[in-house]
Image 1 (tube, protein in one colour):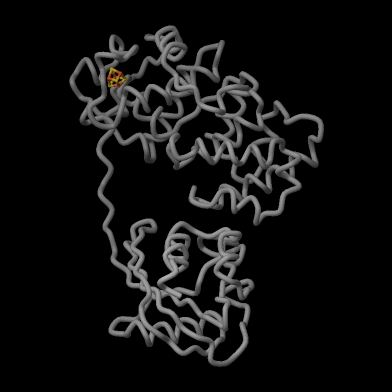
Image 2: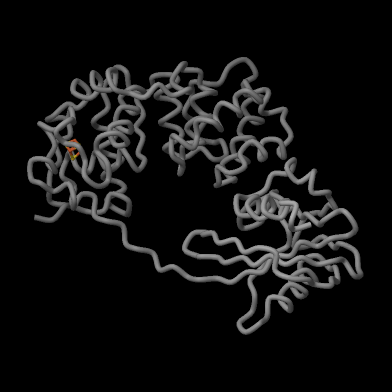
Length: 367
Ligand code: SF4
C-alpha cells in the first residue's frame, strides 16, 4: 500500500493525555519558559529556528537584557540588534524580527495582539512562528512543525514518505493540526518538540522511556531507522576564496555588506571573494580589493587560513595582509567602509568566519 492510500486516524490514539504528564515531569527549565509573555516567546522561537537550544540560551538572555520589550527592540539601532545576534547565524531572522517589532510597536502600542491575521502579515512570520507564538502565548489552537515534532509525528503514525517535502509536508502539518488538544495547546506543541529533542532522537530513539511507545507505529513495527527516511547527502563543492586585510597606517579597512546582499546583510567584513582557477593568492588579492572597493593595494603574505561551510560550499579562505597604495573607497559591492583600529573591531557585527579571522588577526604576533 502506498502512503497516499493509508488512512491515518489521528484521533484514534489521543496523544495529549500521554504527552502532557511526561512534559510536566521532564521538560527542561529554559529561560523562555518562565512566562507566557508573547514577546519572550516570539524572540525565543525566532532564535530557535535552525539553531540548538544550548546555543540559544545565552543569546536569549543577552537579547532580552538589551531589549526587554517590543518597544525597546523597535527603538534599537539595527547594528545593535545584529551585534547581539552575532554568531547565531541566519541574520535575516534578526532583521525580520526587528522590522516586525517596529511594525507591531506602531500598530499595537499597548499589547501584542492575539490575532493570527496581524502576525501572519509580519516579516519573518511563517506558519511555524505563527503557531508557536499564538499557541504558547494565547492558547490558540494552532499547530507547529519543525524538525523534532516532524520526526515524532512521522514515527507515531508510521508515515513512510518524506515528511519534509511535497505531499509529506502537507501530511505532517495536517497531522500536527489534528492531534492538537482543546486545552494546553502551547504546552502540547512544546511537548512534541521536547520529546523529539530528548527521547525520540534521529538515531537510537529511547522508545523504552517514551510516553507514546504504546501507540507508536514505528516502535510497534521496528521502523525507527527508516522513519523519517534519511536526508539525501548534499554534494559538497570546494571553493577557494581570498580575503584581504588592507592597512592604512594603524587602521584597517572594514566594509559593510548591503541590505540586499545574498547573505550576511548589513554585516561587516574584510573584502573577500572567490579566487580564479590558476590565479595565485596574491593576484587574486589585488583583483578582489580593486573590484570590490576601488582601492589599489600592495599585497603581503598570507596571514591565516579559515575554513568554513556555507550551504553546500566548503570554503577555504586565505587571508592576506596588504597596504593601501592608491585610490579611495568606492561604494557599490559594499554599502560603506570604515578605517578602524584593531581595538574597534569588537564593536562591529560580523559573520562567524569573519570573527574567526579578525580574532586571529588581532593576536599580537600578526601585527
Ligand atoms: S516510541 Fe520511539 S519512535 Fe515512537 S515516538 Fe517514542 S521514541 Fe519515537
